[in-house]
Length: 279
Image (cartoon, rainbow, N blue to C red; front, side, top):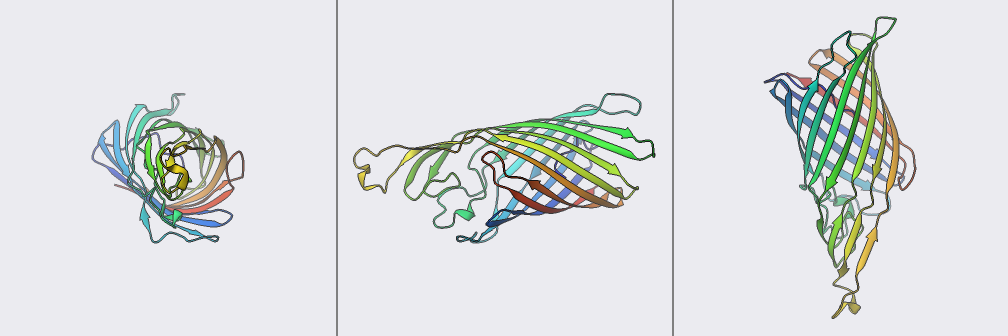
């Protein structure tokens, strides 16, 4: 459900996989969509885009004014090795993703829920691996193990923003670097039915915000500085899912990601559905 494949697409082939989900928190629903659109440029290289959109509903304030676009991600994946039956070498790939700040993140007025982006250009480097095990009952167990880390630039911030700033704020933010690990398994019940499980860990570094408030009466002529720190956070999660494939090129996945409360992380439950189409 969460771990991208280490395999690359054959030249000239493409994959489209849209997800619909609802991030359910204690007082909110974050409805969203995410779509993988990948194309096999050459046999070892896949390129793609990941557009996102969302709508947030909260119980203790105004929700989003409407469905909005989130950040857009561009990606390139290069396959290093390919699994062959009888060999211990897994399929491995390196990937580079670049998130473009297309989503709204500041000047949100009284609707902080309209914030669906980060405002930052974020480069993510990833290593994907994938292997297969033939079980005694003749079924196949596929395992993926992926590691990634992101790096963001400074972001200019004005007024109410996703970084917790208020009206009149002028300054900048430096998002903390996220580090993500995902171990995933898929067990083939039949040729059409598959059970899946992801186990994840995410560490996000401290996000720093610095600036001043132009609406503060004491800000003339020397505005006092404002500094905010989110602190680092850790999140453990697991996502069981079931997949049904009508044919080798078309399937549907139903799953739920569960993240318990932990260090600077609120508990969430995220049901999701996805369609996978390969041509």
